[in-house]
Image (cartoon, rainbow, N blue to C red; front, side, top):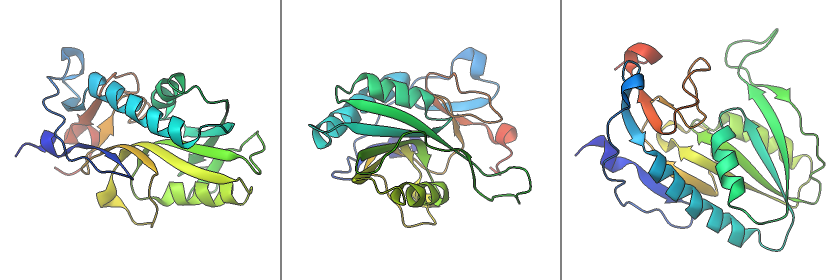
Length: 209
């Protein structure tokens, strides 16, 4: 069975195993670096609409603070927020795995929250949940600020790479352990502007085949 049939829309309340179907070829201008289209622009749009409906229902009647992790969420965040009619406030938090005086892999916060989330409903948005290390650290930081509740929304879930016991309340797609780019996600600050989610070729990413 082709890998494309193993990428399923996913949410915590119900995991759907339906096939995404065929996604089409990689546009010519990207073929040198991108091996395949994993999730098409159309499939992303449909799933974001579904996620927005779930969030709208669960947060109905309450002002929500959306906290987005920088920077891979930019396209997902914009598309998701446009579909929400809830009263919203928006803030950003930055986390990096490197920085002055840090060792490789050490997580440091590069941007702190500006808004007060105490007693408020928080929707934490990220592009991809893989090992869970970053999400675990961000959740601990947010919980210390005493919000009323926190829900986590991610576009992609790489459950196979999880090393921390953390899950998303809303997840767009569960994907295999591919190096993915596009729709805001990058490799060396490139490929964020791809309108689809693609699999980077091993010779480009340096990942063993």
